[in-house]
Each structure stands twice: as C-alpha cells, then as structure tokens.
Image 1 (spheres, rainbow, N blue to C red):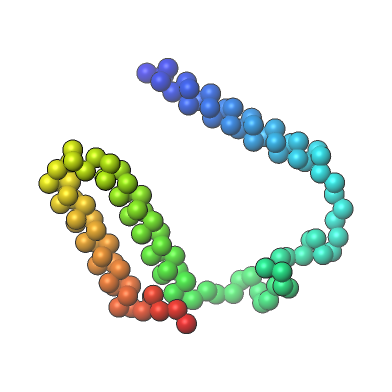
Image 2: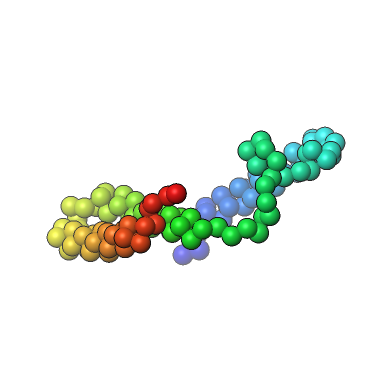
Length: 118
C-alpha cells in the first residue's frame, strides 16, 4: 500500500526542494537598496488612505460568500457532467437538489439586496 504513495512523496520533496532552491538563489542574487519610498505601502499607485483596520461593508462579505458558493458549484459540475450517463436518474436528482439549494441561497441574497452595489 505504501508503494502507491512513493511517487507522490517524491514529487512533493522535489517540489519543496525546487521552491527552496529558487528562493535561496533569488535571495543571494538580489541587490538590497532600501529607501523610504520602497518601504512605503503601495495601493494602485496612490498613497494609502485611512487606517488598515477600517471596517468593510457587510455586502462585501456577502458577495465574497456568494462567489465562493458558485465557485464550488462549478467545481462540482465538471466531475458530475463527466460521469452523467453512469449516474443516471439518481445522479440527476441529486444534482437537481444541489442546484435548488444554491438557487434558494441566491434568491435569499437577492432579496436581502446583497447583489445591489452602491
């Protein structure tokens, strides 16, 4: 059973060594000339405004959650679509319930005005 995971372990070790090697090489090859301008915060080319601890609107988080929900829905659709014929009617019913639950969530957020951006 362990032999099945040897390839994954080797790939993981090689990937970590590769990342570490490139980080070390970039650290050794870089030239450091710190200035006040380089050390300042950067926000799209303009000086930072306000405090970093300002509160965000709840609508921002609602849109973020909505994005995550529909992103996950998309992730579930691809494997389901690839074996759709093998799943048959039970698979169609399960995915229909899944989409219905997400539709109810979308309707709730729409009703609450989370999709209205001011």
